[in-house]
Each structure stands twice: as C-alpha cells, then as structure tokens.
Amino acid sequence: MPKTTRNSHQGKGRPRRLESHAFYLGAHNVDPTPVLDEIEARFAHDTSEERQEPLRALHDLEAKLQQARKEKPEAEALWMRIRKELGDTPPPYFQAMVMALCAFFALALDTLFLAPTMDILNIADPVLQYLAAAGFSLLCTIYFELTGILYIRGRSWPRRLTAVAVGCLGVVSLTVWGLLRGYQLRFAAALAGNPLGQLLGEHPMLASVFFIFITLATPAIGATALLYGWEEMSRAWTWRAVRGRFEKLRAAEIKLARDVQTETEHLGEFDKRKQAQCREWRAIFQQFYERGAKNGAVRETRWSVIRKAGLGVLLASPLALPIPFFLFPAHILVPAVAGFATFIYCNRRRHHPDHECYLAQEHTHFKVIPDAPQPRELLAPEQRLLPKGDNSKGDNQ
Image (cartoon, rainbow, N blue to C red; front, side, top):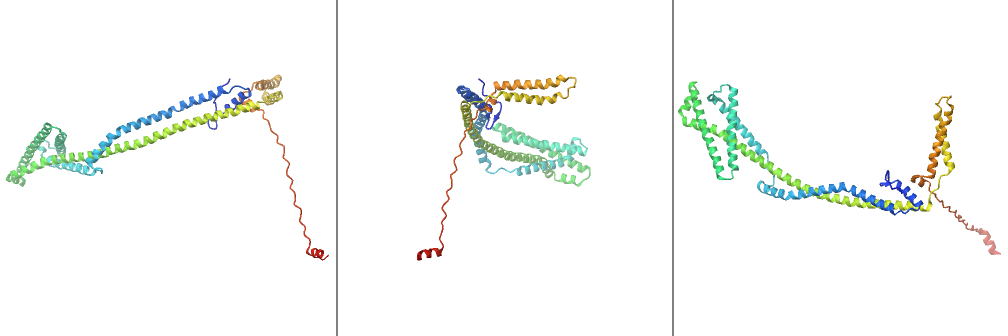
C-alpha cells in the first residue's frame, strides 16, 4: 500500500496527494485505519522535531533568567551601600578634572623652578635642564603619591607607620635639596655681582625657608591633587558602574521573564496548531475516502488512448522534415515510433492510473432537478364604474 507523502504542500501545509490517496483507498474499499494512524504518528514525529528549537530557546531564556535572579541580590546590596555612602546623585567628574589640572600646573611650576638649578648636576643645555627638571618633579610627585596610597590602603599600623616613615624620608630629602638650591643660587648671584646674592646673604633664614617651601610644596601639592582627583574619579565611576549593573540586571530580569512567558505561550499555541492541523488532515482524508467509496472512478476509454497516440504522431511529424529525402523510410519511422510510444504510455496509464489520475477520473453523478412550474399570476377583475347620469336614470325608472 503506498504511503501518504508530503512532497508538495498546499494551503496550510496540507499535502496535495492526501486527497488522491484517500480517494484511491476509498474506491478500493481499503481499511483507512493504518493510514490515519500513520498521519497521527507523522504529526507526532514532526511536532517533536519542530519543538526542539523553541524548547532550546526556552531553556536558554530560563537559564539566563535564573542567572540574573542569582546576581541581582548581590548587585542590589552593593548599590544600596554605594548609594548610602555617595548619595543618590552621581558624583561629578568636574572636580576630578580640576584637581588633575592643578596637579599639572604644580608640576609645570616646579619644573620652571628646578630648571636653573640643574647646573649642580652638570647639565648646562637649557633644553636638557627643563627635561631633567620635569623628570625630577614627576619623580617627587609620584613618590609622595605612592606614599599617600600606601597610607590610605594600609589596614594595619605597621603599614601606615612604614608609609609615614617613607614620607618623612622624602620630606627630609627635599628639605636638604631646597637648602642646596638656596646656597647654589646665592653663590651664583655673588659671582655675577647680582644684588640677589647680597639679599640672600643678609637673610639666610628667610631664603632657606622660601627655597625649602617651593622645593617641598610643589610635589606634595601635586601628589595630593592627583590623589584627590583620582579618588573623585573613582567614586564617580564606581557610582555609575554599580548603578548601571543593578539597572541592567533588573531590566534583564523583567525582559527575560516576559520572554519566557511569551515563549511558553508560543509553545502552547504551537501544540494547539499542530493538533488542529492533524484534525484537518484526518477530516480531509475522511472526506475523500467517502467520496472514493461512494463515487469511484471511470477508466479511460481505448479511443481516448488512440486519439492521444494520433496526436503524438502529428506532433512528431515536423521532426522528420530535416531528414534528407533519400532516407524516406525515416519520414515514416519517426512519427510511427512517437505514436507507438505514446500509445504504450497512455494505455499503461489507462490500466494502471496513479492516484492523481484516479482522482481526476472520479465518477461524478449529476443530480437533475426538474424545473418547478412557475406560479401563474391571477389578475384581479377590473372594477367598472357607471357614469353618474346612468345611475340617476336608473333610479328614476
């Protein structure tokens, strides 16, 4: 028994050969139960295969939703703590930028102050003096920056005492460097006969305090400004990052929950749609099965086969025209072969029609309904009225 195939589809996914197959089985009085069971099994198999991808997508969404719900409490607790520490409004970046600008200005000022004193280190080229002074200023600033970071991040007293000791060592070193700068400048001014040398010689204490201040204050202020600016930048970035992560997880949880619900409803509708489609196939099969059992089919006549063979001869005759005339038998052989092949093919289909041809040859019964007699319309009698004079005359008589 041939199987119900789905080579081509029509309408809502309905196979075209289902009708012809059902009609053929009904015409031959074959039990339709195996075919109906096959239809249900086929739908169950196709439904199981087609549900794999939506199920996989649903499982992925559920896994993402569980992950979001797992990470959300931690993110929410962190956001509440940051919100309590830093406030409800985001810390501005402007203050951090101002502190960074102040630190850069302090480095530039220290470079200008240190450049003339690079003669102590035997650097005479002005360009190299500025480069060396900039490197020295940056080195001192980084030194105090690291000291401050070590003190702030120190969780125990030994680490903090170490940071204080390192900072004091830097202060002493810069104090000595400031005194050396003052003596060097006074010596250079005295050699050049500059009144500055006399001023520094008359007020050595004041000159020492001034040079110590400008030597120590610029890197310390620069390091403090950089450290403060970095902390402000870190707070602003931390506030935004923690809030963004919390908002992202909250939005993701809402979206994923909605997607899971939508995908679940889609799976439910998918199952209902497949069940309705299966019922549609069964109804179509039953309809054409009953038609086959009731009407059957009419076999094609032999004269129809002969007419088709003759048509094949006529259509194949032009193919023999290009053949040379001395091959006259070919002019007869080519149409004859074509007609014979057409006859064999059509005669075989006459005795063994396929399902489509069998359905096309359905024995249709036409029911003749006699015309009902048309009801005749009865005309109402015309009312005749006598003239007024006739009435009066009859009354007088």
